[in-house]
Length: 385
Image 1 (cartoon, one colour):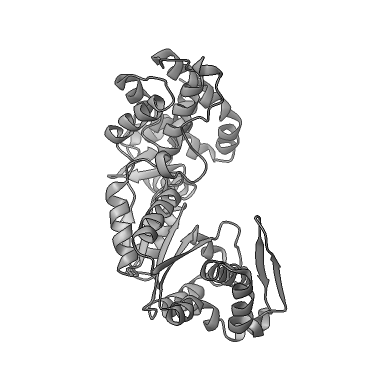
Image 2 (tube, helix red, strand yellow):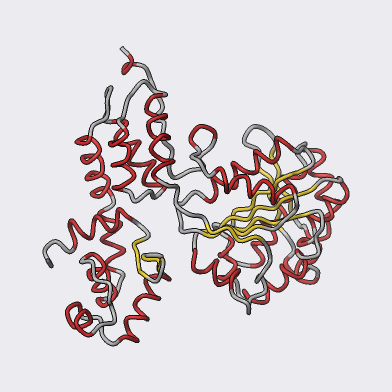
């Protein structure tokens, strides 16, 4: 019996999607690979959970396979909140990606960074760890050596290096974010053997850093605004992944998955996985709807906490969106939903964009999280209507 065999669910969410789990993005992959080969700096901007990290990993592997003279250094600033931590984490990542053998790594760390380091932690083996602890006073005297480290190594080894930095917007939490950006830009723009790929999950903050003429990183590189993967690409992918495990799903049912999740990459994969788990041989519309209902309920506590953290007028604005209102500044809408003055409506919008609850597309506000929208509609505002 096919169902008795242990089998891994063929949909991935919440971690890097690779190989057969990676969906479409052919144009963006090609553009990234070309930028990597040509040493063009790249900035990727999109809402969270739209697959930026998976795209960068996919494109870097593709570029590395076709060109052995390119090395990639992956830096994730997820937990980095200070300039001091940045230098330690950055230097560690650059050294690890540049030297694979233990002896080579330790020798070159001592040679290139010796005067900064009171401590090096290294344990070889399958789960090897390597980290630096630095003398902060020494680093602040000449941080240039650390910022120029990839360029120095690339020059010595006659190889191009691409430094990929995830959650780049976290530098805005540093004590002097503008000064730090100026410092980075002044060094990085002089590097001819190194290029940078910068991306992060706070879309509005990334736009502020890279698209504002007054900011140091304005015109730093090629900006890619990542779009959603279209239903026309998702549907064959979903059907293919079902078929690969001996199960079936009709085109219209695969389309229903994309409609319920509004083509949101994370939720398409999550809902497809839940439907797949509930399917023995052929997926049905009933299974998909039940899976989506369960998904909405699973997120209830998280969504309740988020909604409780919003002001009354912000919640009222979301209610107006759910009810299909478009003229938020009109007197009728403002009175009906308690939104206040047109100036107040603008403040509400900006606050919700800043909180990553909504986005403004084509002048209209839209929900960034389609499952949150479904929860508000079905549970939170149901009694209000």
